View 1 (tube, helix red, strand yellow):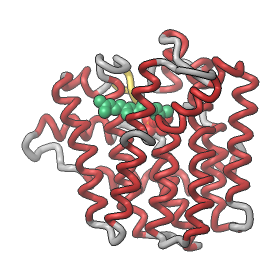
View 2 (cartoon, rainbow, N blue to C red):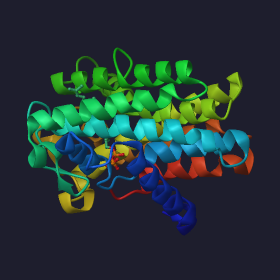
View 3 (cartoon, protein in one colour):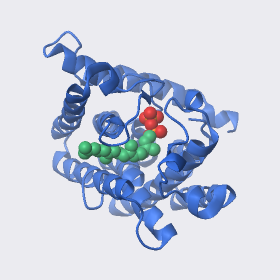
Length: 292
Ligand code: GRG
């Protein structure tokens, strides 16, 4: 990854996200203490913060400047994402011990508390959005992206049940829902916060969809090539569980080419947006350059 793309703004944004996330959920000494400790363990335990960065960068691309109003949806999407990781790691789903380089929520707090911590993060996300000026539209968008039939829960179920039908089409169907839907929503929520017009929202939707697919293809490739220590989560699970993946269908080189094609597609969606959209473009490229 070129140095400029790993630059100071991403580190500064991530640091700001950490501070605001810490304030977005109840403190660890407020009862029920173990619930709040469990929520904070998973929420504040690392993570690339790609979704909040996308949300903030989309708002900046529209406004040409920093957008304070984008913070609320930026935090909300990270809460939803963290809930999904906690539930995904449960024994009934992916049954994993390691997440973001640390023990999973249920390993430390037990299954019942992990389920409830996920529930509370999901609920808190919508409570936050309820306070935004565009609350109705934002709640609808995030609910669609997180739920079913077009969102994350639908994708997770299809992933769990195994791909059906023509292989590549089936993998794309799953990836669009399991991963790309929330990344696309992150971008669109940033656009909404910045009062983007219809054409701008259309371009942001295309960008988010393409970058979201690139991100999940890169995730599939990393699952095969990186170690658990590098990833901060268990590597090699897709092959072990015979999951439907892009490298499984296209081979590693084919999947890399497809991921690059999706990044190019994402950047093309922002043609004519000028330097204000450079952070968004850099995040699309980051989906491929990352090591975890
Ligand atoms: C409703 C019971 C119930 C469970 C929901 C929907 C769901 C379970 C899980 C979501 C599916 C999931 C884990 C999708 C994969 C997306 C993905 C690649 C996650 C990892 O995201 P990163 O790499 O993680 O951005 P960090 O840790 O950096 O935030």
